Image (cartoon, rainbow, N blue to C red; front, side, top):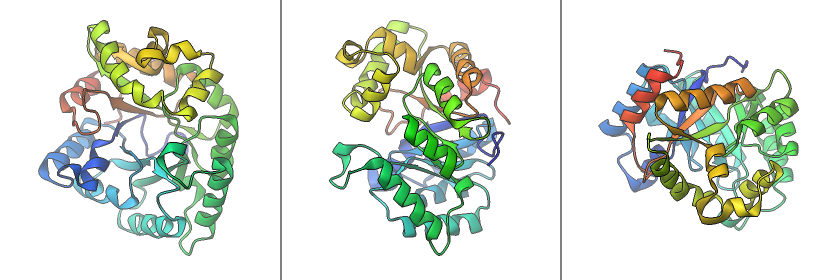
Length: 295
């Protein structure tokens, strides 16, 4: 996967499809099919399925649109056995060649009793993908990488990295570790609301979930934030750093900062009052008018 890859310059990150596929909503129905077909037509390059999706969650999305790439953002290595993942990915590749990217991550300690030695576990998982009967090529997978060791692993054993909840500064630092050729595709949270006080309130409502997870807070501490920045849903400084807030033009300007820092692709997550289930189609349309999409 070259840096100007099938991911395109911009994608959409959403947990709605994964939650629907688990039974929380109408996965594969006309509402979801119409939404992904519109994302495809608007020119977004990739739909990232959030919330540790199974590989098969990509099937209705791939069926609903002729062009868009689908990526897992991310599949937890604790939830799915590597040999089964490899077989499922191979089946997708035969059916939809070049349109699926396997995003992998170690998730978080509180989410599984199996969590242990995450870096070593990821290496072992990649070894299993390499040795499977239908192996997953390194260029067909990306890693959810925040720290230096996982970023190096993403550089050496995958197409690159898909960092979540990061800043422009982290993007520049990650690019230095990844080098010139590896893919860097960070996620960026967006609140489309010109009232910045209201936008920060929406952002804090979502950010609180992540400030309970040491993988994220440790990375933010490494970037120079302090424990006080994590109180009450996040300080203004923190919210402003990990979100793009305001109207579509303001978001486009923030996105340009990430690209200038070394990102090849941005996975845009529109945050609403219920981002795990909403399909914010009007927001995706407004952003499509402001971002330099590929379509």
